[in-house]
Image (cartoon, rainbow, N blue to C red; front, side, top):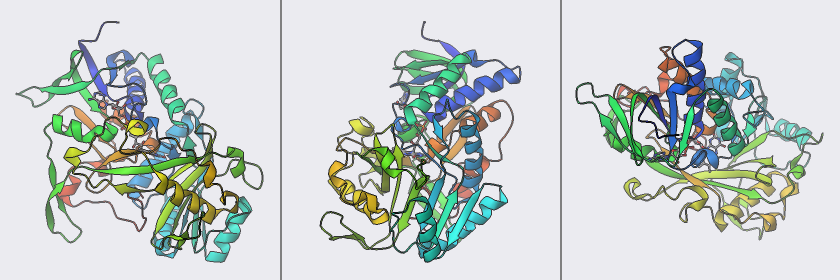
Length: 447
Ligand SMILES: Cc1cc2nc3c(=O)[nH]c(=O)nc-3n(C[C@H](O)[C@H](O)[C@H](O)COP(=O)(O)OP(=O)(O)OC[C@H]3O[C@@H](n4cnc5c(N)ncnc54)[C@H](O)[C@@H]3O)c2cc1C
């Protein structure tokens, strides 16, 4: 097919947000008599899943301290459940397992989950938590845990299967997805300030609306649109903090223990929930007994037949390099700079052994293959999902996003004239207005 010279809707990025927006927009256009998937083109400089969505661990959870995130995630879980097969979604549940320093935060999450009808059990107290965990996996041995929040919904999804499932649904609605098309800029109409065309290495595509779903490339697109490099943020104290850089990169630490995934089945022989543990108990090496850390640490893990073992990760670290100098490309496992090393393997495998006896002595089968990747984070580490230049929806998910499959549905509704109250808390103006999300005691920047 010839390269399109125009399309009413141009979506940039064939990751989860671009593809979800494309599919839901096609459905919505048809349902409202405004058009169809034939009005939608998705372009990607690589291919489907070339970005963060293609390497994500795929965990889907509601567990957020921020009410707006929780409400949005509840909507996202509904979308996951709407076609679990196409989205390769495994609704095994999710457990947030925490020390006393996070106890109050977890009570607040559990209470608010009850308020929005999101099913979860809260177990409190060290003895009860230990006993509860042993009813699921009898070798549980983590120390110092005083709350377990067991979300009955959520779980995980296999990343590339999901992306091709979503792409297939979009294409069945008439959407065109074109790989190998690099967006190089935008033509801005001087009168209206709107984007009139998306400029690419294959030619310009005239358009009425643009959706940018850039993942870790958010900073590059932000600059193409001449959006502010720094922001002023009104703090909780009412004081304005100026000159805060808009983007910072964090390096995500993930890997796979090369054991049979069946090793982590529950006492009943079923797939277990995704387990996330935060702890302030001293963490000792499973290799030589030396102290790895006496500071707060956190890990998550799940048996995964797609990754071929026990897959998971640990808390990420902020990339110290000036964001202007960070090389996003080559991305993911192709990056020589941002793949995890021996230190991660040592910490993560020792932490697995701290939690469950079955993982003791298993570091020797850690899969020594490139994994991990970077994410572009906003100043408060929460998504900026907003419209700029009249007709450009920018979906900067601040690396929260594989689980956020429902954002594309909400964006599609907004493009068809139905504003979303769920998206409102993620507008860019929240920084200047001081309408910030509350901050939790978790060691992760995304909880
Ligand atoms: C290691 C890791 C594990 C993660 N695990 C989880 C998890 O368990 N759960 C969770 O919810 N989230 C997770 N995340 C976060 C999640 O993966 C991202 O937030 C989400 O995938 C971003 O989706 P996206 O569609 O915005 O971007 P992406 O999937 O990154 O897609 C962006 C696309 O834009 C394309 N592109 C870039 N520049 C151009 C250009 N100039 N022209 C055309 N196309 C371009 C890229 O090729 C890419 O395909 C993880 C992230 C990482 C890195």
